Amino acid sequence: MGQNFLPDTVNQTLLFPPSLHDWLPEGHLARFLVDVVAELDLNAIYKSYLDKDGRGQAAYAPEVMVRVLLYGYATGVYSSRKIHKHTYEDVAFRYLAGDQHPDHATIAEFRKRHQESLGGLFTQALLLCFEAGLVKLGHVSIDGTKIKANASKHKAMSYKHMNETEARLKQEVEALLAAAHQTDAEEDAKFGKGCSGEELPKELQRRDSRLKKIQEAKQALEQAAKEQAEQQRQEAEAKQAKREAEEQRTGQKARGRKPELPDPEQAKPDDKAQRNFTDPESRILPDGANKGSFVQGYNAQIAVDAASQVIVAAEITQESNDKKQLVPMIALVKENLNGLPEKVSADAGYFSEENVTNESVQDVDLYVATGRDKHGESAVTSNEPPPPEATPKEKMKHKLRTEAGRTVYKMRKAIVEPVFGQIKEVRGFRRFSMRGKLAARCEWKLVCAVNNLLKLFKYGWAAQMA
Image (cartoon, rainbow, N blue to C red):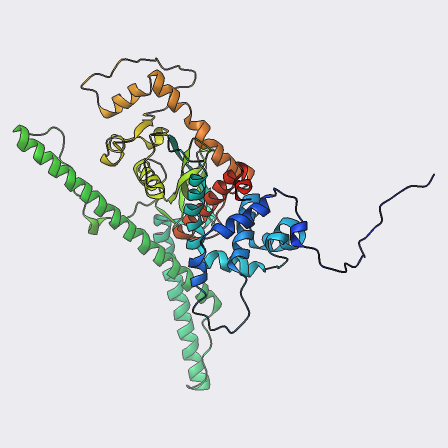
């Protein structure tokens, strides 16, 4: 009995080109992105092409570039070279690109040139989620994670090492210059003046360029130390003024030492202060996921709405901890959605008495841990009010021990941590593609915009559009 096979059509010539819309099934993510990009405002990108005189090679349509970038970030393809390759090998990429194939340099340049506009898509995606009813601002949870910079931590150097290396390189450069001058003098005596000069020796070029980089890095660290000292001075002056006002009010001398006023002009960087030569704005930060290890990167912050795990605020900082991020993140939520959340939860890294008593968050019901609970230790539940003389920290600690407080705070992990898992584990975003704080901020907002668009896709926005 003979076997029955479908014909092999690899060499079949198509008489008519097929419609691109026949390439993918209904309900595919790529189809959703075509619809959603058509709704986005890309005027900022279009305006950047207005100064062109029409000559030269035609540019790819911004919709095409935005679609392939969004799909790349949604499927864990971040490399411009891989995106270019996928426009040939992946049906969805080919569909989104309209059967065009922007090369990797074009994709990388588009992402770099329009980084702020691409980061601005976060707000547009968030508003689409809000209009679809996915954002309620009932309970928002805030957390941060460390994302690697596009730089190796081995390309960083401490201030102390900079000083030592600078001194050594200066000696080497001076010795090489002296040798070069001696050679010049000998050649002038032998051949006469007026002959064409040669380039500096490669050894001198290499040392001289390294010396310049180190000197620039030193100056940046010294300037940062002065700025930090100036900020500390202003804070100390504010504390001193508050102390003096309290003494005048009570007629008694305040306890404790007077705040010291640092002199910014005398401020010097700590010997261990480091600066990276590849991405100078990145920092060496402790990696919370792997205790005892460090990453060269940025501290990425998100605020997540409990209703559908939509990110309602996103930011990048250079701070190693989260203590200064609670109030700014709540302010960003208000800026993005013109409203404050009813409840906000955050872990102990965000707590300070200044944070929870800040005037801008007085209308927000805060649930911020004051410290870590010991493993296996169960906190005593108490529904009694805190004593009148309790400090802000004691009041918050008491609040989290009530049944209502425990119910709200235990949802914190379930709201925000899965979002980090989806970004880092499912979509594999663990390193920025571009360098510098501004570029990292824009890329992080693009990552968060994609997260929100995927939530919108999951909850059937495409069906609503149809």
